[in-house]
Image (cartoon, rainbow, N blue to C red; front, side, top):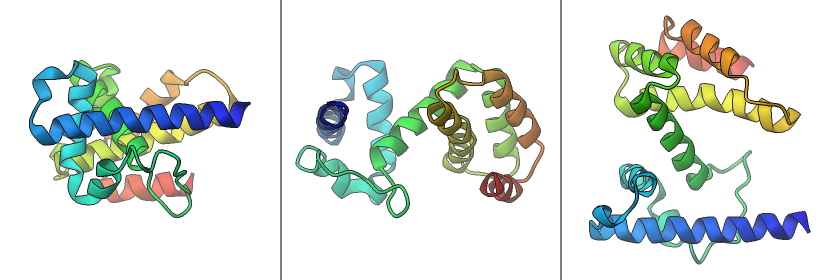
Length: 161
């Protein structure tokens, strides 16, 4: 039952991404709501990496990505959107501060967002695995700690965890 529900959810989600992708390619962003518009822009920004996955998202709705060997482009785009929303809303403010600190450390906009996503994933994974509330205080504390570090050092620290 649970597996079939998961497959159904994945299929619906991939078809939604495919519709967003088609609108993005046609330049029909004004027809999308704010969330879908954000996803469309991120998909366009990542089209050089994931064009085929976006283009055939509806046909490959059953494909399950192996986290050990593949990047799930739909999860990547979703996490990217979450990070962008945190920065835009300055909520938590530590995400916005971390992002700006990384820009000052010569990161590109995309690199800074990906670093933020990597930190976020560390806490999301723990939350999902242990079935506990998201530890917002710990996440914010980590962002404060990491914002004074160089990007390569952050990556090494995250890999160690």
